[in-house]
Each structure stands twice: as structure tokens, then as C-alpha cells.
Length: 343
Image 1 (spheres, helix red, strand yellow):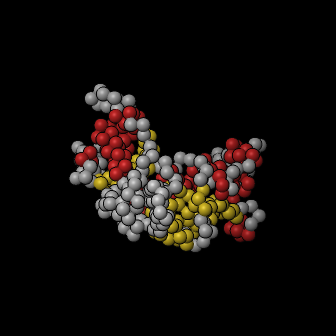
Image 2 (cartoon, one colour):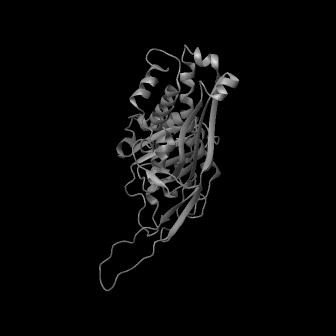
Image 3 (cartoon, one colour):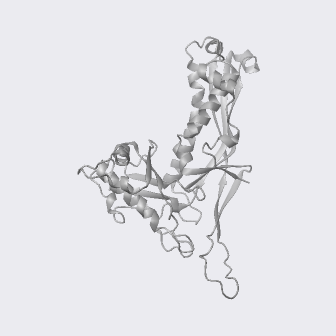
């Protein structure tokens, strides 16, 4: 059964707090404060430190909810919403909850590096100390890759419809469109689709964010009534205009930036894996009860070392560090993400 990890740092509850000794190893970048040879303790400390600190900056962990998994396949269920309160007269008005969901199967992953015995002993410039943390960084960025693959593939959401579709509908929700184009949101019609200006980006962000409030739950009630924090994931060429739109106080016309008066918070995450330069994604990130994505991990990233004294060391005059994990992602609540196609 999966368990949601709700802490500010999603990896804290998975036992990835780094000890004082390991932090000291990280601070020196080597085996100890005496600048001694790089040690296995130091390697593990560097790995855990970077896994812990990097999680805070990872956009995938902001966009989804991380679950701890103890099965190969987890069944994530969406039970329908409770009905609207009504005046009590007569008997109870019993309503059966809708049972929808997705199954997500974990996959095993590994990433490994090796270095010669001489490098281990003579690493005076801490080259290895800089490479080992990249094993942790690779696993953090791996979440981003998995989510990009899922978004581009447009996998099915819990209602059985593609994650991005023009006709989602559950119960009394009516038709919901989270695959916006210029025909449905005029702000997406810009001068250059791959690189909207600051003012165009202001209109795109405010228009897409406002569209979240049109979504309804299966009881016909507003599904994003309390929405207030959003993350724009876009190709790098789109990012300058989007970032300027979220940070500049004034628009090009000299008037106050409309975004500053909305009371909403926007973040921007440039994602180089998005090869369609005209497509962007706005994600609501302040409701972890029903996130846009599910991230699950059966085995958290851990590093194994065949170092000094190991059979591999003796036979091959080299050391190996390998990091392994078992994880997967899946589509969450389609009402928490909107795809926008600029033209």
C-alpha cells in the first residue's frame, strides 16, 4: 500500500537526513577535514546531501505528490466527492461514492560510475567528490523526465480519458476542457508561439489560471475554489517572457502588471525536454489532496560502493559506485493541470 509523503522536503520521511559526520564529509568534499582520501562514508554523505537539498528545487516534486510504495503495482483510487449539504427532512439522502482510479507499476532504475584506483587515491582536486553528487542529482531530475514523458504521451487520467482532453466529464461536472488552444483561450494567439512577450505571457498566465475556476467536481461544485498557487512548466525559449510576467511590476504600457493584483502566486520551470516549443503546462500546486501527478517510490535512491578492499577493487584496480531506485509516475487529477498550445 502506498503512503503519501507530505513533508516540505519529500525525502525527509524516507530517512534521508544526513548525519553530522556525513555533512562534515560533504563540507570538505573528501573523506575528512584532514583532506584525506575520499572514503565510502564521504561518498554516501555527498549522495544523501544532494538528494535531500535538491528535492526542494525539483519542479516534479512540486507538481505531484510523492507516495511511499510497498508493492510492485499500486492502485490509486479517486472516490467521488461527498454531496452538497441539504436541509434535513425525512430520511437520509445516501449517495454512493464513485470509484475511479489508476494503477501505477514501479520500474527498477540504476545509474553507475567507475574510477581507477589511482584516481581514488590521488583525487587532490576533488573531481570524484563533484561527480558522486551527480548520481543523486540524476535521480531528482529523473522525476522531471518521467513527468515530461507522461505529459507528452498524454496518458489516461483516472476517468479513463487522456490527461489532456477537451471533453472530460464526471457525474454532474459538465464538460471540462484542459487542452486549451487559441480558439478557446484567445490569449494563446501570440506574435511568436515559441517566445511570447512579457505582456503576452501576462495574458496567458492569467487566462490559464482563471480557467481552473471553470472546472467542477462530480457533484457539480467548483473544483478549484481555493486555487492560488500555480507552476508554469514550459520550453526554455518561453521562459524569459513568463518569468518577466511573474516578476516585473509594470507592463510594457506602463500600467501596473495585472498579475500583481490577482493575489495568486506563479512559478516558472523551464524544461528543456519539452521539444514542442509552442506547448506549455500550467499546474495548480497548492492542493496536495488531489495533485496533478502521482510520484511513487518502492525503493528510494541509495548508493552502493565497491571500493577499497572489495573483490572488484583487487581484481580490476578500480572502484564502482552505483545508485539504484524503484519508482514510477502516473496521471493524477486532470482538474489540476492545463495544457496550452500557442499559435
